[in-house]
Image 1 (cartoon, rainbow, N blue to C red):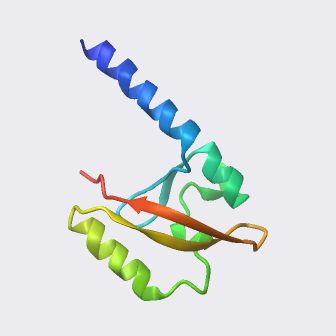
Image 2: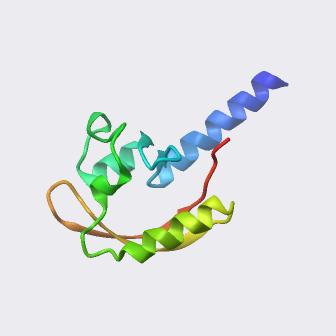
Image 3: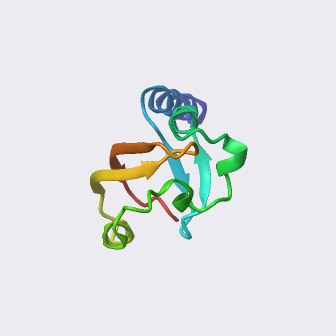
Length: 105
């Protein structure tokens, strides 16, 4: 049963990674995971992202209050969703509708 659950988890992870832009951070906002889609749209490699602050892709026009609200929401174990303006490595602007949630233990 445990192996079956593990296989199912891997299948879900693969489906999400193939269909979505995914990154994970630790409670300090440091990137611990970025899937291929995230790397492709941001222009950064995994090596350039892992261990860096998620602010590496934050566009300077993004209001500070946006992320204050986001962190307040997710640390309350609620889902935050909204449009975020990010910046790729080449300086181009990326608008994304994003769901954030905290999954920290």
